[in-house]
Length: 290
Ligand SMILES: [Mn+2]
Image (cartoon, rainbow, N blue to C red; front, side, top):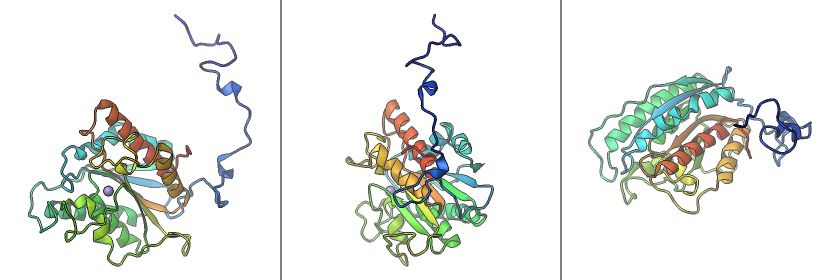
């Protein structure tokens, strides 16, 4: 049996990569993006100590597939809280939001009472935590949870900028939706009074930003375990680029990661998608890999 103890030889091989590296004068605080802005997130709108509140929201009634309610527990069991602690966050864990399972529905909006009362609970949690200067990190569940997160964030930050990373625009309303699935409606339902703004922070460099990240935005080659996967999605690198740029704005105040469905792929696909989800969250919470 071979041992990798102290008798290792120098040269290329296992265990001695560090000794092969040139010394570096390149520190993290010196990294700049193409506009000359520092690449180390500043989290300038959150209170110290920098705290994230994890809100597991296992909502399934905004879309037709079972299993998306297992998304939050999958990410938590695979180490999300400790991974964020390692990035310097103080973490508060909430129990899973308890959703109704029965309710009436309005024309054109399936399960609208369940989705609506669930969004109300989420909005209240998000509002309370954001109001204390913490970053609410809401784990879906399907994307209808963002009806609640946006409402909660907007009540604290009326000038909130929203970055919506998604394979779909989620701009439907009950009047125009073909399916009536409410995970396709959060942006549509919140659009009233919102303005489209190509340059979120140009007029106000301190504008708070909420990131709503749908795993279906990522190409199914990297994230197959989701309900409405679309070919030609974001590559691994693009998926992280969007997340890191958002973090590097220093203005992130809230985030959602949604639509991981561990019942819609084989074991390998589920593991890949879960790890991709965790990695994207770490990226928008300050880890730099791009
Ligand atoms: Mn979506």
